[in-house]
Image (cartoon, rainbow, N blue to C red; front, side, top):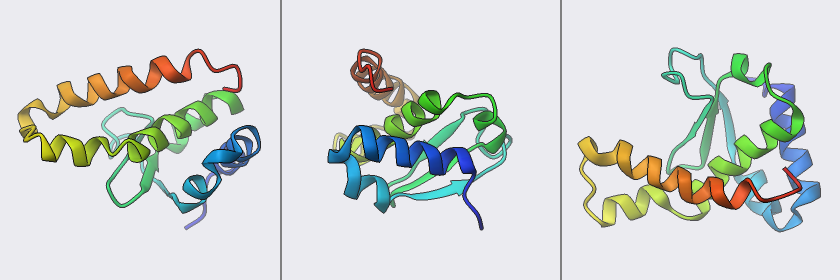
Amino acid sequence: MSIHPMMIKARGYLSYEKGYFGSALWALRLVEKSSAEMMGAPAASDIYWRVYYDPEALEKLSLRQAAALLEHELYHLLRAHSDRAELKGIAPINFLAWNVAADAEINDDIEDDPAV
C-alpha cells in the first residue's frame, strides 16, 4: 500500500522543521482509511504507532496543515494519551471526553508554533 504524497511531504517537512521528532516521525506507520472508516475525522492514531488518515481530507489541506495534523497525532503517541486513559480507568463511554481534553492540550501547543 502506498502512502499519500501529502503525508510523505508532511513527514519530511516536520523532520526538517523539528528535527527532534525525527526518530518518532519515521517510526510511524501511515495507513490510508476512507472517510467512512474514519467516522469523519481526518486522522487518528493507535497504540501501535499507526496513524490513519483520510486521503480525501488531505486533498483539502496545505502542507503546513497536513504537517500540523501529523504532529497532532504524534503528540498523542508521545504523550501516551491512550495508555494514560487506560491507567486512569477511563471507561469507553467517557473516552470521547478524554480525547477532546487531550486534543485541547495538544492544540494549544501547536497553534502558537510558527513552524506549522
